[in-house]
Image 1: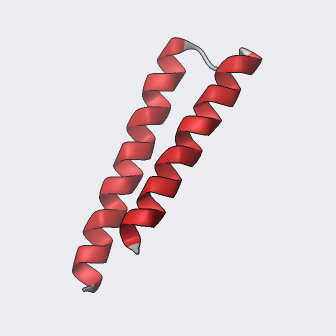
Image 2: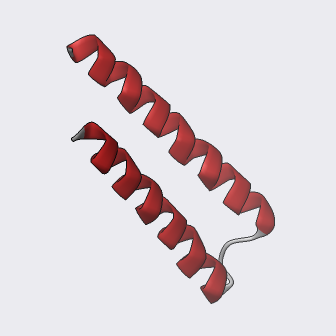
Length: 53
């Protein structure tokens, strides 16, 4: 169940980056920053779910 949520979050993040890139509001640096923040959020969620179990 949690894996599905993580995949959905990743897809939403990728879509957000793609739409921002199409609009030209996101630069190459910003994509790296957003990817890092998304991965950090996912890591935190994984750790939290492990502790909850």
